[in-house]
Image (cartoon, rainbow, N blue to C red):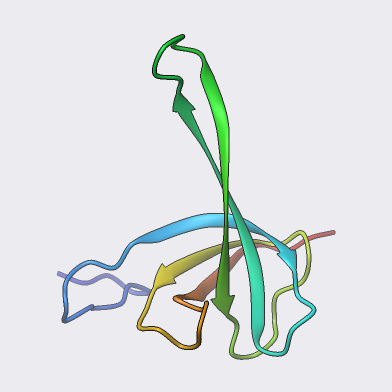
Amino acid sequence: MVEAGQEINKRGHAKSFNGVVVSDAMDKTVIVSITRLAKHQQYGKFVKKTKRCVAHDENNKCAVGDTVRIVETRPLSKTKRWRVQEVLVKAV
């Protein structure tokens, strides 16, 4: 059963991540930084790993510092493979 606010993806489950917008200089495009903790193979210490994704922002509603949810989509350009699903927290 689908609740309000959920999308149905007919081609399976798309990956989604939460991240922070680090650049909004382009038109309808933002760069989102995704940070995760990974355990070091040899030493066992947890290390921060960061990945930057280029995401499609149709209405230019994102600003630098916003926390957003991005979801996987078809290739939209050479580097754009994600789109902004929702803005979770607006920057102050």
